Length: 215
Ligand SMILES: [Zn+2]
Image (cartoon, rainbow, N blue to C red; front, side, top):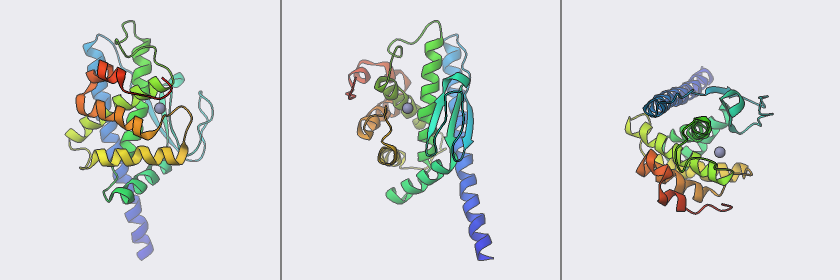
């Protein structure tokens, strides 16, 4: 009986994660659609595809413990066990619910999606074009900051969002040290810039001058 209750409680917590994530991504889709529409362009919201273990994609095999945007089929793949585990780690490190962790991870991938789609348009945004490697990661982090602040403002996330984001980025860095993603402190700076100053700030001069190693 106790075990059943514990299982139910855990399922309930994961369902709450899913709900927060889907509400946040719904908001993100609406924001990007508005932004593209105002520019006379069309945004195609990426498919969000959870997986566990490994996953094949047109962009190659996606490993466990990862979230990845594949431009070829406009899909964000994410290891759902990994995002749940990440939230729990962030929660224990910060003493909060950790609810921002999965949202920040997906917002970063949506940043890649938006960046890719903006560059395919006939009129790319100045300062947001022809970035590569670290430059593109920096942009994805800034755009994720803008999105996450919108989710926080709408009350979709609990308080302590920035503390949780800092912890999320530090943990991802610690766990993966993935090639192509710079040190988490640098990433957090880019995120903060978009979070505090909004979307337009992701192509302003201050952002351009934010230091990113390798660029
Ligand atoms: Zn990235």
